[in-house]
Length: 240
Image 1 (cartoon, rainbow, N blue to C red):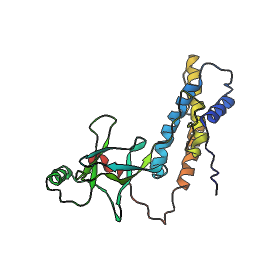
Image 2: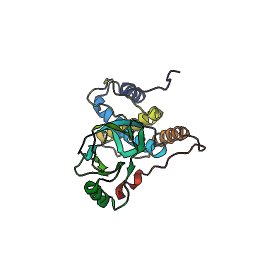
Image 3: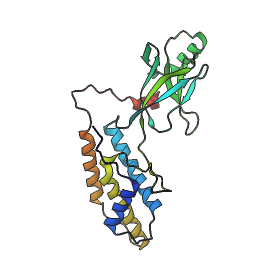
Image 4: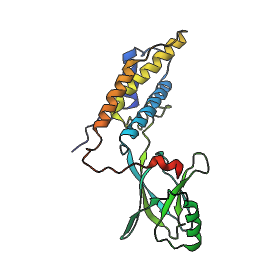
């Protein structure tokens, strides 16, 4: 069965905003700025989606182990280090690579480096340089091959603000379309008032309403309670 869900483009969103605010001939705000507002709305929608439906953006990446190499970069588009599972698969040998959470993980790593007695890998995350978090494998791999699959939550798509017609400018949280439109309209209204020396007042109830409607739809898409859903332990990361 074909997918019938509507994936709105940045151009469609901007045109809707301009039509509803009669901005077609206005010059006080341009497309790149409108796209920046769209991305700000997507930031907020993404946080809500992940909080309610952790696997909404579930995806995976293959990781190639290299003999003697301990650290491996996280996927570039991972959301907040949210690893759902890491699987080792080499022929008939398949198992979950568990996260080392105990405070003794540093000692365990040092012991494994010397003794090399473990037959299975474990991992924990390290963040030694800004913007470059990595998976730290224990013990240090003694093999080379594409044996590891990292299941994780990716980030929502962001719009290219330099080109409104970029083919990748797609809102991949289609349930949030009306919220994004109302959020951008709010930002436009605030800018217009400020440009006229006015002080913005009010709470913009349309934005709150569309957020509520959007969250309701996302909540309904969560699997039934009868299903066993794996607990999300990502909040333990700071203590790992």
